[in-house]
Amino acid sequence: QVQLVESGGGLVQAGGSLRLSCAASVRTFSSYAIGWFRQAPGKEREFVSVIRTGGSTSYADSVKGRFTISRDNAKNTVSLQMNSLKPEDTAVYHCAAVRWAAGSYYQPSSYDSWGQGTQVTVSS
Image (cartoon, rainbow, N blue to C red; front, side, top):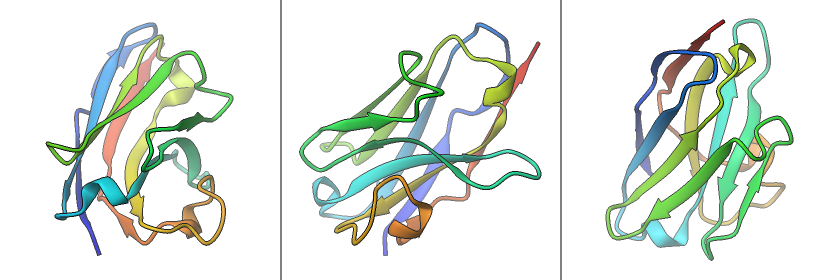
């Protein structure tokens, strides 16, 4: 399994920006798809974004146009730039890794390694 560590969360006002990072400890990082998920209190974990091994990306409709995912394989990191943040973006954000997804990249069950998460709080 891959060890993942998220950073960059915090408290920001609505309309502000944050940049999350996910650092991975694995030699073959470029072979892994990395997804971002979030979980708000009392809610299920939901898909935010994914970047695949070839660099293609996907986003949840709720963040499309506001969030941008990118990866730096030389540094074993994936970043999630979050702009125009809204109070409904408040959640714990987790990154996850999978080498070969048997199912959809949009489902948490498709990933086999997870980070501990970083809290993002957006005040109104």
